[in-house]
Image 1 (cartoon, rainbow, N blue to C red):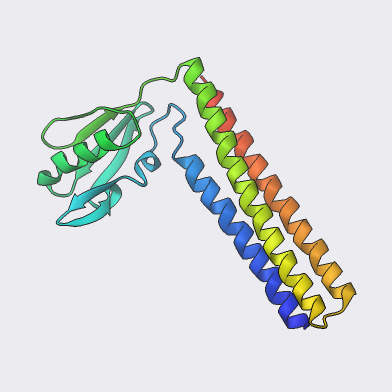
Image 2: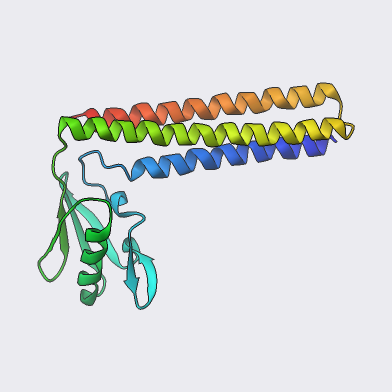
Length: 187
């Protein structure tokens, strides 16, 4: 039984870590008025019939804090990349010089900053819900083990450990939130 409890604890950590990583990736997509190559993560282009991430068909760089430069490996991809950016939810208008595509990132208004902070809070809340769901799922499994004969003390100890993980990962989400909000509100 102790092996099974250990497996549940490892599973709890894995699930909570995935929730944290997913939330961190989602926060990366929220632009803070600064040009970052990660802003284009999740945007795909039609590359010879396959949907391919932009960073696999082009080099994405930041020549300055307000500009993204996208240099396709093949010149014929410029139109596809522009179309993908226009159709994305970034709200940016690409311009090209025949060699590369430039994206100018406009400075954020106060209202836009507040909306982005709300978006950050929503992503953090989604992460917390995922962590709580993981805790519930693991605790349900532990209770089932107890019914199947595991000792009450070892199950209680494991539940305490799961709560400890929950607190740790929730705090990490709070830290991510504070960091991202500071980044957004910095003018």
